[in-house]
Image 1 (cartoon, rainbow, N blue to C red):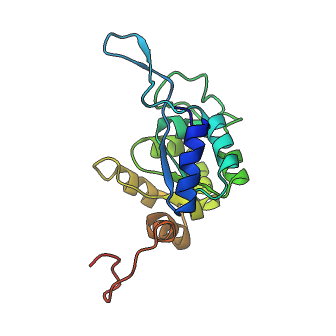
Image 2: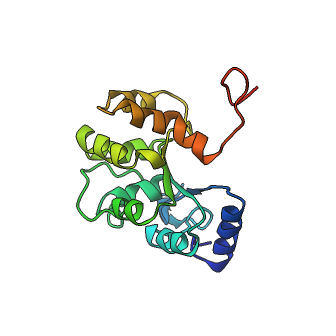
Image 3: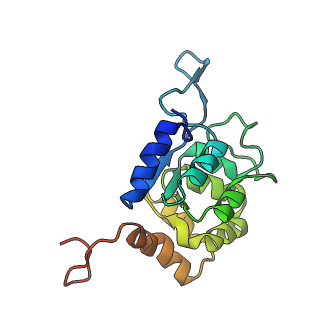
Length: 188
């Protein structure tokens, strides 16, 4: 079902009323199947960032968290023409992510798995750091995959301490406030 389908919008609005963020696993429409031929991904494909844009307009009180290759590929202008699941070339002009972040305060992003790190690395370390600093209050560190590649990469970037605190911890605390126990831990 597409992200801007009326049934999706109804669900997203309910999430907004409940202050429940919506994590969107956005993928590409076609992936190579076991037989080596492209297969339409009806279970995963919810549309492009254009569908996301329309959903965010329709649901301004809902926080959307972009995640996965279909979301992060939109950092580059070649998002629709590069057939790779994880594009590896340099970022080209015309990527929609900056525009979407600038237009929609309800857009957040999850850096977990390989897609967020892959997208950031495509632009080089300085560009990655600039992106993270610019949207630091809406980026989330996550652990969708095992290993420490993402944290090592983020730690290698020239980010200020406030940005690191936002990405590693404070944004998650703002997004899902949990009661803090006597020892400062959100979990007892």
